[in-house]
Image 1 (cartoon, rainbow, N blue to C red):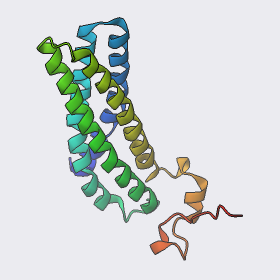
Image 2 (image 1 turned 90 degrees about the vertical axis):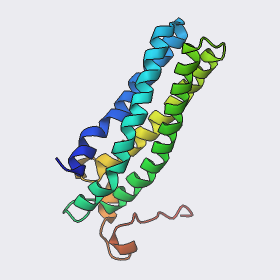
Image 3 (image 1 turned 30 degrees about the horizontal axis):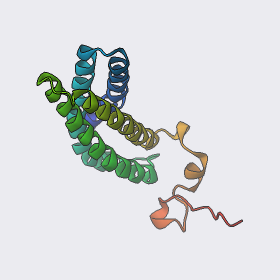
Length: 171
C-alpha cells in the first residue's frame, strides 16, 4: 500500500465521521445526555486526528495522478486549497472537542457551552470537509464534473491549459 492508497482509503472518514459526530452531538445537547455528548466529542476528536494523515498524503497522491489521462488539474488545485482550509477547521474542532471532554470530565459548568461551541465548529468543519471531498471526487470522475470545467480543461489560452475559463459577468 502506498500513500495514494492510504489517502483514498482514509479520505472518507473525516467527511462522514464529522457528520456523524455533529449529529450525535446535537442529539446529546438537545436531550441533555452527557454520555452522548462525550461520545460525539470523542468521535470529532478522532476525526480530527484521522484528518492529519489524509492531509499529509494528499501531495503524494497528487504526484501519482496529475499526469494520468482524464485527471483535472483544475480540480486538483481546488481540492488542495479546500483541504488546507478544512484541515485547520478540523484541527480547531478537534481542540474544541477535546476541551469539551476535559471540561465534562472535570465537571466544570462551562462544559455545556464548550459542547455547543464544539458543535458549531463541527458544522463548519463538516461543510469544509464536504467541499474538499466534492472537489476531490471530481479530479478523476469526469461523469460528475461541472460541464464548464470539463469543456474548458486543456484548452489553449487557459493558464497551462488547466484553469477554468472565467466568465464575464458584465454581459
